[in-house]
Structure formats: C-alpha cells, structure tokens
Length: 106
Image (cartoon, rainbow, N blue to C red; front, side, top):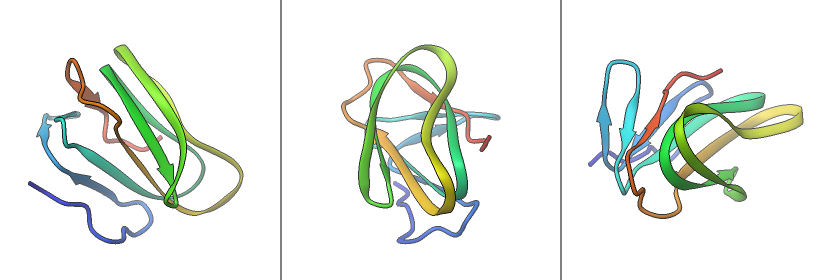
C-alpha cells in the first residue's frame, strides 16, 4: 500500500492508501489519501460517487465536503494571497460507493 512522502514539492501529487488507477482517473478505496503540493489561490478537484472528505491545508482542517452523484468540480482551497501550501483531502468515512478523483490540477 503506497504512502505519501513526508514532504511534496510544489506541483507534486501524492497518493497513499488504496487506489484503483484508470487511464484518466483514480478510484479511492477506504484508506485512500491524496496530497497536493501547490502555490495557488484556488485548488479544485473533480470528485464523483458518495462520500465525505475532510480537507486540511498546512495541517489545519479547513472544511468537510459531502460528495454525491456524478463527477463535478469541488473547491478544496481558496485564499486571497498565493502562498506555498499542501492540501490533503481524505475520506472522513468509508464511501458507500466508489469515489473517483480526476488527478489533474485546474
């Protein structure tokens, strides 16, 4: 089972836990974690399925996102000034169906 490195460089994507990799998406298992190293005012992720995600930015819980239905764009992070940060969304509970994440940054 992969683990996320202790630190990620800017622009890097780290996957931890159980994931099923597809051509342009990945489906999260019950232990899945995703971390992004970014320098941005906004961070988005396309998510589908049914689950709840807790989002942390620089180690601080910032929001809980209820994911439901077909894949759509979710805002993980929004701030006025751009600063180096890392964002870790992870399932708050086991998904009742699969959770798919488009691994592109927008």
